[in-house]
Length: 196
Image (cartoon, rainbow, N blue to C red; front, side, top):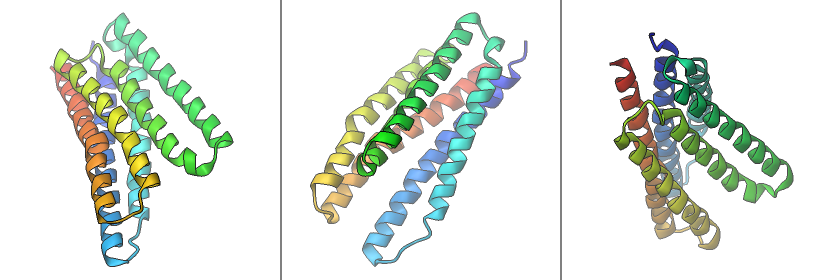
């Protein structure tokens, strides 16, 4: 049986993580340029990139769900687990958005949504990947969970200056850019494995 929906889903999810890399890089470039030159750049570009990545994530996930029976029954169960994880995290995030203070919610919401995408990706790729891909996924999740909370600590507890911005940039590279690159690689490799 041809895995056309699974292949489409993997393509969209590869694009998602590529767009997330672009989002983080653009937001950092805009932030640093604005900080250095006291000029406000058009952040709408950054928001458009983020919006496209959200859309491609849900389209890719939908295609993986639609093609869940193209591989094995075990794969079908893992796709269902991944989707339930997405639903649970979205409900938790909505509750936080409704009942917590906005300053807390922005950072926490971003953390929850990224953790959702990463953990769901583990299940979405679990049976259509090799051991290297699964290890790369866990490394990505580890880097995100360890280093992303440090960004919030640095931003809230230290006055913004050159070094704080530099630490923030380094932490964003460790917690977001490297994991996104690894996930882009994981989805692309899974696509290549299925295509064979």
